[in-house]
Every structure is written in C-alpha cells, then in structure tokens.
Length: 590
Image 1 (spheres, helix red, strand yellow):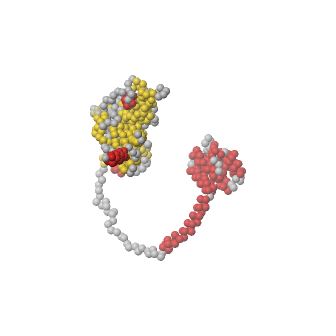
Image 2: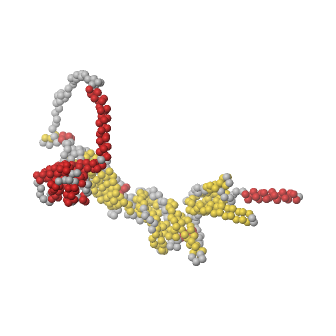
Image 3: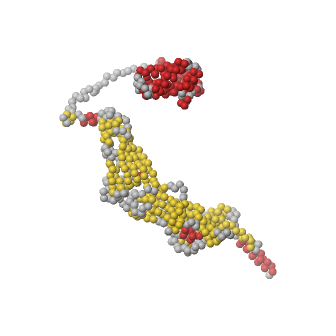
C-alpha cells in the first residue's frame, strides 16, 4: 500500500512537469464583434521564447499600432512563469465578416501556429462619452474637414477642394500619415503641392483651434449629375492628456494612434446649356482670347513660315482641341507642334496652348489663310462666345508658276480657248533604232589595270609621311594657336574685302582682323588692347618703327571711320595698307 502511494506521487510529478513544459502559442482578441469606428486589439502569446515570428496579413483591417512586444518573467513558490506577447491594434476598413489568420513562430526547432479567429464588423456604434477615455478625447478634439469652393459647378468648370485638419490646443500631434487618398474618378484633377505643413490659428464650431492645410486639389468634373468626392483618411499619432498627474502637478500625456477621416461630400454638376451652342464647340469653358499669327507674310517659294493658332486665358486649357487652319493645296503644311504653357493654382488652369504649323509654299502667288473661329462657354455671362481671326494673305514673291494657274489664265475675252488636237502631234517619236554593236576593250593587263593595282602600295609611304607631319604639327601647341589666329585674321580680312564700299561693316571687319592678328602674334587679350602697349610689344619683337606706325595708323582709321565720311578709295587704301603691314610684321617679328 505504501509502495503504491509512492508510485502515484512520482507519476503525478512527472505529469505536472510535462504539463509545465508544454509549449503554448495562441491568439487573443479584445472583442469578436465591433463597430466600424472602433479598434481591435490582437495579442499573440507564447509561454516560451521563439524565433521567426510571422504575423497574419490582417485582411480587412489597417494596422494603426504595433507590433508592441512585452515579456514577463515571474517566480511563484519556486516555479518560473514566462510569457511573451506581440500586440497589434487594428482599424476595420469596412463592415463585414473577417478572419484573423494564423500566425506562426519557431520554438526549439518546431513551428507552432495559432487558431484563426472570426471577427464581425458592424455599422458605427455610439461610444460612451467618457471624458477620461483617450479615444473619446481624440474624437472630440481632432477633426478632418473637406472644404469645396462650389457645390453646383458646370461641366468642365474648376472647383477647389481643400482638406484641413483641425486640432484642439490641448492636443499635441506627433505624426500624420495618409491612410487612404480619394480617387476623384469622375474628375480631371491636379494636386497643388504644398512645400510644408504650416500650423495656423482658426476656429471650428465657434471654438479656438489650430489647423493644418493638408491637401489642396483642383478638380474639373467630366460628368454631369451627382458626383461623389471621396473622403481623405489620415492616421494620426497624438499626445492626449489623462486624469493622472506627475509629481509637479502637471497632467500626464498618453500617446494614441487614431484614424481620422473627412466626411463624404457630393456635388451636383450642371450640363452646359444646349441653347446657342455653336457647331464647332469642343468643350472650352472659362474666359479666353484667340489669336492666329504668322512669322512672315512675304517670302520666296521653298522658304518656310510658321502659322501659330493660340488660345490663352483662364479655364480648362488642357481639356479641349484647338481649331484647325485651312490652307490652299499649293502650300505644303506639316503636322502642328502642340505647346502648352499652363500653370494650375487654386483658381484653376491659367496660361496658353498653341498649335504651330510649318508651311512651305511651292509656287509664286498670293495665298490666303482664311479666317477661323474658336467658341467657348463664358462662365461670367453663362453664354457661349465666338472669337474669329483675321484673314492672312501669304505673298510668295519668287518661285515657279503653278501650271494649273497658268492654264486657268489662258483666256481670251474672258473665255477659255479650246485646244485643237493635231493627228500628227506624236510624229516626232522614233519607232526604230540605229543601235550598233560596240566591242568593249579588255581591261586585264592594261595600263589602267596595273596602275590601280600598284596605287595602294605607292600610297602607303605617302600616307606615313602625311601622318608623321600631322603628328608633329599636332604636337606644336604654340604653332597651332598661331596658325589658328592667322587663319581667323585672314578670314576677317577677306570679309573686309567683301564689305568694301560699306563703311561701317568694312571697318568693323578690318578691326576684328587686326585684333585677332595681334592676339596671335603678341599673345594679348582684349583688355590689354591699347596703342601704347602695342607699340612697345611690336618694338620688342623687332618690328621697325615705320611698320609699327603704319599699324597704329590703321587702328586709328578704324576708330575714326565711324564718325567721319570715308570714300571707297580710302577704304581700298586702308585695306591694302593693312595687308602689307601684316605681311611686313610677319617678316620682321622675332
């Protein structure tokens, strides 16, 4: 009997030890049914430490907090209790039935998984108004508001949507993240970029608040009827005061994550009136001006000009088509280049759009560009307006004559003459040939054959000599610089020769030639270009005094020629004198 008692005690101790050593890994939720405006806490607990923890995807929820990790160790009556917890705070995206899927972890080489938990999300519920509840404090002191400039616009009329986040002065914001952006599916939209979030003072429900303009969007409705402007959802991290105080008497703040959403707004978009709508109306709404211009109105055949069709002003500039120009077939027209210079601010699009056509006339004559019109809906008068351009005549001064136009001008007394065909009009065409056989000479072993055969071998030493000469010349940096400047001086002298008889153009070209020549020979820059320095440098180079004086005289002639009458004979003398002087300096300068 005593032996059985001892055996029972040993078995009981073994079972107890086994029970304490068993691994537990389970998921726990704060509630299995909650409103869409409530939060759900999910804890994943284990009684032994593990590795490679993998949480579920939380489908249907947004993680607004976590993972927060906590570990507890305790000893009670000599027994150790261990618990490690991963906590998540979830916000439901919508109503419905969802599942918190399995989480997994690896403990001592084994993988353990939690059991899935079903969660039901209902419509929003009324929360108890507990002034000490941080969630309630946040809901009463942080508001996201959607401001719309116009709730009943016309189709394609600009409206502005501004999202403002109002925060009570008693709340401090740590962070703001976008949780869900509105889509604006039925609108053309342009977001106004904000450089920074600026905190400003304002009022909400007749109470003092701080607010931040978080988002600005310009919308152009593309459908008529009732359109929905979706809400903006933000995840905010705020510091909320509690009913506890520290040792100094100040209220202790607690940090809380919360999703803030603006209200869903709707607008009623009116269609544009059918009464008075022009046939050529393409959807322009706003206040515009219209202009058609050409880069030139007189030119020769095969030259080109540009015709520009431009609309400028304020309105939906990017959302309509420009009218096309109609041109005669004798003018070759290329596809237009579309240009947009549009900026978007809170008042909508402003600027201009244009189509630029390149036109090349083929024949001599006068060609009209007919007047074209542009129609738009004026928001100030709520009426359609039409703007028309003036007719532009392109005068092609020189070029071939269009054969069709020449035939049209063959008239007598205002009546075209009938052309009488002759039966012998094609007799000049020969129907027989007088070809004879030509015996082609043999090319092989002729003098031309041997010359072409030996020419590549003879060209090799010549190419080597030319290459060596080019390498030596390329290595002569100083010489190359001088040759380049001499070439430029000769270029300007030749230009001065072409300008003989044109006083101002001639002396400008001559002065440039002298300047570049001096730059090459004396290595001086424009800032050093003075007569005294030129005399000194030329003398140091060994140039004789009379040649030096002649060079200075030519420079003075270039300066005085702009203010005194000069004949063509004097210009020719100055040119010859400059050429001779440059040649003498080349011979004398060391």
